Length: 408
Image (cartoon, rainbow, N blue to C red; front, side):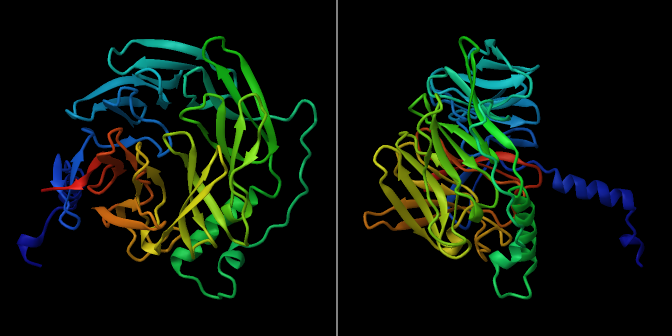
């Protein structure tokens, strides 16, 4: 071997790390989509919030994101970043410019502009808060608990069906992606065979009063308060989506339990639900059946009216979101191992609804180099001009925003 090719192994590792740790550009125009992308975070390891949590200040100026236990905020206009607090972030308030978080067995709130901090309420043992209501008077979460009145009947134990038989009937050989998906669903399905009793709870931010309600032998998850009705809570029955009726709403006094989407065929799935900003619509990923026919679907919580926008396979996304003005949808795409098994699905997408119930799709960012073990979790900025997402396109995770309008 020529001497010029004899590179010490340690140096190889250093060079490789340096390449991986290279700082992403501050901004660029995606050559495949011609949309401008900007980096909002400064430090590697930064991540935007999960797609359905409110991450924007009430005045619309700042976006909250995290870097491990650090809660940071970026001014969307100037891109100035500052540390706000340390703890586990919940979400931002819709009434005041505060971000809510947990630390030292209590819920705290810090003003995003003044940095003034206050302890809201201590947390009872075993309780984990996951959302804040529209007027910031209630916190909510789930807890393992049995109904003290004995009103909830324990379901009969259900048989375990190998998910590969349900998901891919008649197939004797599966692709690597299909086999991985079936194994994941097997783990989720086993959780439905003998579920523990869970309940929802709220804590009053003024008095500290704790209320527990909505008892069920089910895995309760994905709590989201209505953005406009302080007493309306959405949650889901988690598990294998094609075996559960997932999306529910309930009043915070425990009344008005409603199933928002009833499955109508074998292997139908509905999930990754989220509120529209007007509080009238709940939107979700619908497949009729799973992995074959794709929709962005919505139900009006006031009238019961329904909408379905068809999607091509490569348009499907792990998560969707809707703009504050309700005129646009965004999706974060998916790799070939996701439920759509898309061959060309790794894009941040923009969708414009048409009067005839169809969608026009526009690609915003090429995500071919993104590892989808980190979900991008798209959200719109309050002015609907940018789509925010997190990505490891350049190695470490960062928070980015892509402009809805094409670069000139």
